[in-house]
Image (cartoon, rainbow, N blue to C red; front, side):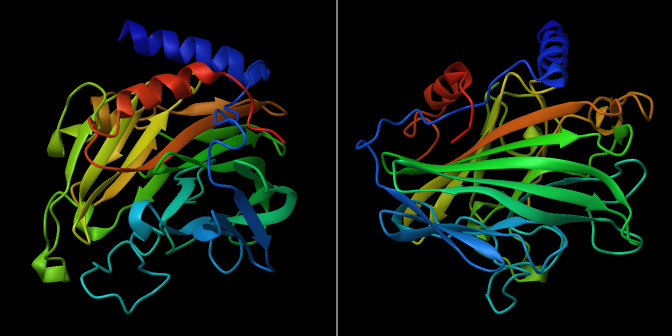
Length: 336
């Protein structure tokens, strides 16, 4: 717990003041497949070596998402539902679990997580930077978080960077929350925050009642905790892996040490939902409700940084621990 307290103190001190830099391109030009980005009306299409990697879709849903996400061997790494509803073998639960996204509930008492009731939305405002052509591609965008009646609660600026590391594919997601309309409180709740819904084969368990019969995934975190026990545990990183199309592939998610409350808790479920959630101290540690609330004072900013690494093999073969050390030590900004 000393480590967690230190992470909170350092993270808040650096992040609220803006006195840190986020990860940059740690792959030299020429050492990786070139990344190109095609800008369309409602999305940006990201290609690596001329082949589709992902799309940043900022129109048509209640929040911007990344979908699809294509990993090693051309394998789709996330669930297709609800963007596509015709894929056999996928559960159709949690329609707000849209591939890869950032959201939470409550924020200032508003449900920005689900898609029922009086929920809020994260609305794309504008693209600030779209840059490709080298070993890394980059998208910077501004967003507004609004209530059902359109009232702006706060704003964000997000930077997404894309690159290859050998056979692996990498997404860096950096998001700066600005308390532009007044104080912003992320509530103590397990419903959040930086999240992904995996391909059904990476689930830890089948669910024949919902059509899922191909699950064979495994999970481990940086502390060596495995399987269902990863739920709610603090860790630097987490990895889900398994066999898809006769290939062993996996998804590692890294929590940067500069993040508030690092190492984060992981809302990691047996059905393939994985979320980094630093706020849910009631659910994860049994502390009194509200203990995990985090308030950003009016006019201040807080930044969260995460890396998604889509890899071949199990975590040991993929050298996930070393990749995390490289990520944590890079210390440069995601910037043009």
